[in-house]
Length: 307
Image 1: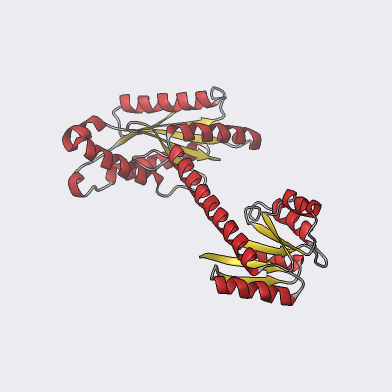
Image 2: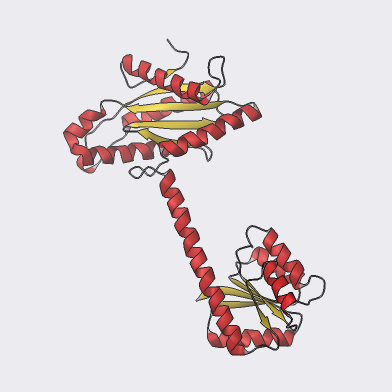
């Protein structure tokens, strides 16, 4: 059963007649009514509606104008609209369909035909909603690392490109933290690859905790992660990285990983500087800083300008 339908007609008798037929067919949980286009538009903007039945000729805002208003608003344009008209000539019907109507019913209407056309639009709307959800799920899967459920490398690179452009446009800083889990092969050797996977999932969750709404963490590959920090100066990024390093080191694992201690080496780089003028520069400098941290003994944070 669909949730809400809106009947728009300046005749209360017509609205009541349609509502009665819809109630008998038991197609909707709630039936809303509006006497004109302005009242209808206000209701559409504040109440989720699954189907609209709209008279063509109404005072103030007629059916054509209301169709245009619905089509112009992204949040409304997927709502099917069945137009109600007392005119039967084909040119008018074609115009209604061209301007966004999903179907039409000629007044005085046959109750059986009205319900049949409503059912068709409900079915189409249901299929469209399912398709939209499936597309959203596919999009999410294409952007997500299947193990850790954080962003994957491809999505990270696309977002970083946009963040670099935004930082340049706004005159702000963009920092990244390249993270490599120390001696991760030992985790796999001791706990098996399933244990290693559990550790990566935990480490992704630790890295994601406490981020601002516009920060994001991505799995760069293997046991490497990249933390992206928009509008973050270099010194602030170093402090964020150090806090994360401490959380990783102090995390208490449970279950089959009980007793495991993990540490991470991190490299921090910030755009723009004299020698970081592009996204490849930013990634290269963060990567180099991370390898310097590993060479210096691991479990530490290095920056692009640290010796």
